[in-house]
Amino acid sequence: MDYSIFDFLCLLGAVGLFLYGMKVMSEGLQKAAGDRLRNILSAMTRNRFTGTLTGFAITALIQSSSASTVMVVSFVNAGLMTLAQSMAVIMGANVGTTFTAWVIALFGFKVNISTFVMPLIAVAVVLLLSNKSKAKSMGEFLIGFSFLFMGLDMISAYVPDLQSNPDMFAYLKHYASMGITSILIFLLVGLLLTMVIQSSAATFAITLIMCSKGWIGYDLACALVLGSNIGTTITPILASMSGNVAAKRTAMGHLLFNFLGTIWCVCIFIPFANFNAWLTETIGQSDPNALFGFVNGLEATDPQVYNNLFNNSLPAGNDLYQRVSAAQMAVAQMQMSVSFGLSIFHTTFNLVNLGIMIWFTKLYVRMVEWLVPNKKKGDEEEFSLKFIRGGLMNAAELNIAQAEKEISVYAQRVGRMITMGQTLIHTQEGSEEYNNLYSRIEKYEDISDRMELEIAQYLNRCAEGRLSNEGKMKIAGMLTIIAEIESIADCCLGIGKIMARKIESHAEFNDEIYHNIDTMYNYVKEAMELMNSQLSDIENVSQSTLMQSYNKEREINNMRNTLRNANVENINKQHYAYQAGIYYMDIISDLERTGDYIINVIDSLREQFRKKTA
Image (tube, rainbow, N blue to C red; front, side, top):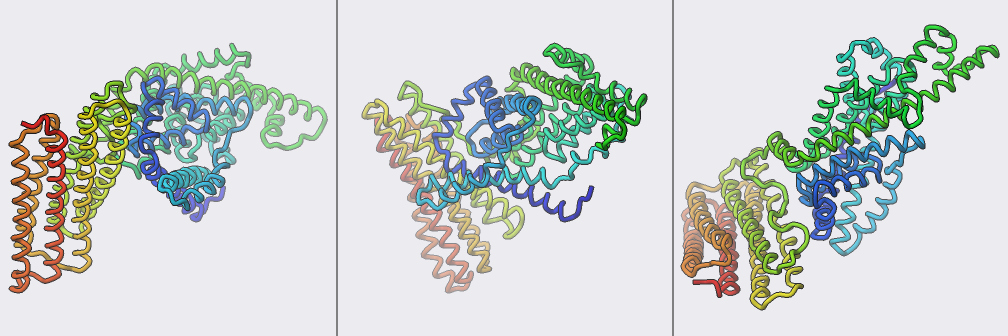
């Protein structure tokens, strides 16, 4: 087998295409999905049983558990599915993958979804050229989906061709009679083999070749299949590398489900394998253990027939030809039995594993959250709505109450951006910490845009129902509030962009500038805290708290005016350079605008919720 450096570089390129496809697909989903896809996924995964059926159906349809679990990872990464929902779908996908094994066993073919990639790209390009943003987002999703499958296909093409070189595994027959040690060795081989060749179907084919040559028996073939079950988890793990914490947790959940299932199976491996051999005979096939004995007996008693059989050479002599033909027919029949036996083993294992594990979904979520913690406690780096889930409730007031709670969470999340912006100003420019913090601010601003959109869509749907005049006024007020909160997030990102321009022009701030910026930041943070305290109890806003907010806004405006007047004098006295003064004033103006948006929220609370003020 020839495998060059060029082939290895092509493999790395295929992995890169796969990861890029995952990223583009996830971003396209985030832009295009909105409320509709969230509601569809919410209905499909309403409880652990419907989620399991969803996973089974998707995997059976596209005939690839790797592809379906990668899609689940992208849904979680886009905030369209919770971690708990993804666990149920992944459990169903593990059972759905056995459907592929049965199709191969019964019909000898597998649907290759990569065939449809080029037509999908053709459709995607048309959508990308559209003037409608929704269509463009769908085009991005289809492009990402196509790249993802192209990457999967190319990974399989550029890994070493082990299936066509089964003799590489001939040495393994020396480890086939070591009891439980043999089982563990072949389980590990199945795991590593599937990780390398990225295809459990190819591992299945190699396993069948090894059985046919008499290197291993049915029990060790089952161990290889069991190992491949864990090996398939490498694909979603690769996909999650470009995702957020929730995506990584989803991939870890997939690995944990298969790993824990393998542990109980290894504990009862021999009786479990024998049970599946009995099931194979019960459905009308011969004993799957018979192939190993037949081939080894043939090698010992008639080596000439054995050599002709596996060298694919035409035997000379009529008698030898007949013996080889008879052996070929017998082996083909026994291969069918082994194929059925391995499919039954795979199916039984996944069904029993599902039957056990589905009752511990919540425990799985807690374990995964412990294994993959947030980088920083309290961070919510992934997009998720906490109180708005699925469709509307029958009681209109309950819908409004949900939205009020969600707006409070939204404001608190945006409030963290103000602190991030202040920290950014004091972080060493160009350092890794600075770049990471700037990226976080960008990500939070993107999340803010999507939260505003989904809360607004939810409120508009609430407004379509039967509401009192007071309820309609509340919704109008809340729509104004979320627009102002999103503007606060824009200001926070705006300060990051000002800092980027400052770095490009090599301007330097002195201690006086840093002190004044911190003073302004402290005023704005106090105003934000007052706003958040009122939003946390939006139905009971007090007049005294409103007055505190108005006083704080006056302090912010006065501070801005004082600093602006002093700036010209400071530049003239050469306290700092003119260019530094420009960026300094831009930051002060941005913070003053943040205060304006905060007071706009306060105005909405006073006007639309005035019946509750005291």
